Image 1 (cartoon, rainbow, N blue to C red):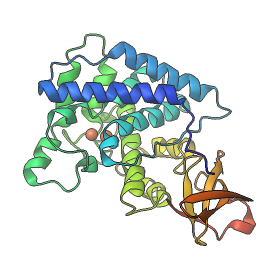
Image 2 (image 1 turned 180 degrees about the vertical axis):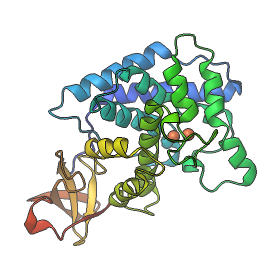
Image 3 (image 1 turned 30 degrees about the horizontal axis):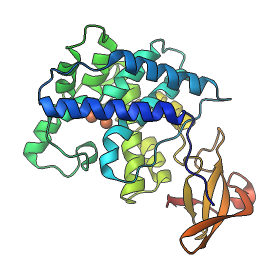
Length: 301
Ligand SMILES: [Fe+2]
Ligand SMILES: [Fe+2]
């Protein structure tokens, strides 16, 4: 028997967030105009719940949601971006408005519901030229949705409008650079890229979760704020607890414990395949220990 992946945040909060994002996206798609009011109070409550769950941990250490189909990406992605952003913001001294960051992270891609591009195109990849133009309008369309709600702050709107701006000026829609991009937008941008890389590693297997971490590090100081990348990689593990992984030795194992420090080297329990089932063995390996340094996790199964 192997355990299901579990995260720092309670399943009830996650399910509520998924439902809410699904309903909001469906409604926007049905109406096909930015006239739907986002459920601000519900989002605030969900953000508060996520924050309380993270605060209850010995250290802010969160993970991402393993999904089995690309359709689920549409609501798993904003949820993960919110969890990553809230956890990182809680570790940063100069961040006061964590609720705004959480709500902005949930709503960052809300404009995508108004353009007809399927979620199978993670972060705009594989699109025609026409599609790219429409894709690039989603931050501004998102802000139009938020205009319907008087209580949504300017910080949330900045997150939605700037989450694709990049520190080196290569982003869109305005090509802002450096500190012209609000810190909260830089936090959500970082979570957005990390989430899309991790989902890609799992669904398409074109990269490994460890390579997603490496890629994030390569963007630090160029496209992404290097301080935000450092904090985010210290509190978001690329290997969720309970996930089944393949080791470089060919063995299968389940992530049994993650701890702050080397997040790419958790403790795992080796499992054996018997028919269609995976049976846990008593062999537990702490990948941080020097005797296991040649063993790596090569992917999530
Ligand atoms: Fe986006
Ligand atoms: Fe996104």
